Length: 251
Length: 251
Image (cartoon, rainbow over all chains, first blue to last red; front, side):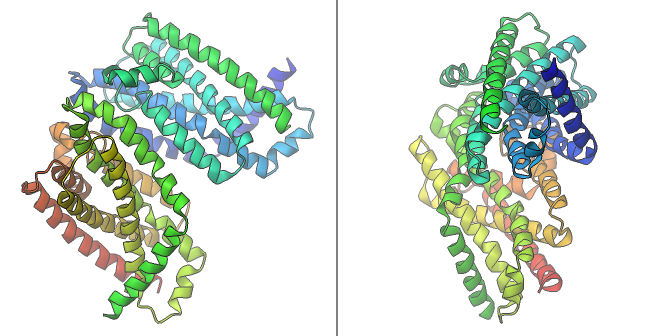
């Protein structure tokens, strides 16, 4: 109960900071919208889909995966600068639970990415995407789980590698392969077999395949519940492990 | 004569600084190599390339162009940093010609992208790319003109908008559409007609198509000399304009 309340307090505080700076949120949407409008036509050609609705059903989940992956895995930098600037230190002297402090800071990234996901989906709707509302909501849940995994990994890395440059190189080196091997540009379904085999071990590939099935209206496809189970399990493990580490090392 | 000597002096100084931190060169290769290894297989499938050799012939020139485009367009930040750290100011009190100072700095980016391109191509050679050395040299020349164009645009923008928080948004908002509409992920040849029409006005698309023709050994193709002429003309205009702006605004 206390953890839930503390998480909510931290979440509110961080959300307040975000809302005060709407220009930043708009700027982070610039790149995904560019890709949405200018990359989808290429994908439509090479995937041989006849309508833009079909092309967006393939590409919007990929784009959401990429956004989730990047905003999650780069969250460690915010943590690092919060530690540096003494924000974390000042919260430590309050009676706030350590787990709540950590979890609130993780959930804010989930909320932000899901909000961006909604905006991207709405833009895609304007340009021809058609998908049932329930399916989009389920896709957003999968996206949220992916962000939780990413943020937890990133926080753990930030705690172990507290140098800005080293963390940047490590994160960059990990994120691009993970994204490409999740089929965030061209879907895995058309990739060579060896790529598909490697991608089985990439939870974000499950997320992107699961979301794509949902966007295409196959909500009861096997990959949807498989992806949900895998992501939920991994998110639980990652959040638990990262908050234990955080409690021990930082707070 | 004095201009050439001053350019050479500045170039030596800047390249010397780059070579003294080889780690930066290696980390700048992380992303391109990730794309080389993990995006080419996807492209091979959707473009129905018969072999990895053919897929690399299509994709490596795109990768070199996007490396050059990003390396060039983001050069403005280095100029802003040099200005705020007083590097430019200290050169101003020397008898160095202003145009030489600018040109030397611009050429150092050409050298930087050239080194990265050689290394990326070397990695691709290991994985199956084959091409004529003469064609590669020509492709590097086209690339060099493209980088000069990009750096000049970036310098002009950095001088016009000397604001470190607005410039990244502006550059991203410019670089992403330019690279997508140059077919730097999936070649323009398979894009819808409207995108190809728009791309006719994008000099970076000419660079991507021209270097691709060279990698495919079509050295006599009309796109090769068209791209060379367009880029040479635009690079010349851009360099002259940026040098004039630089002399007036800074030095």
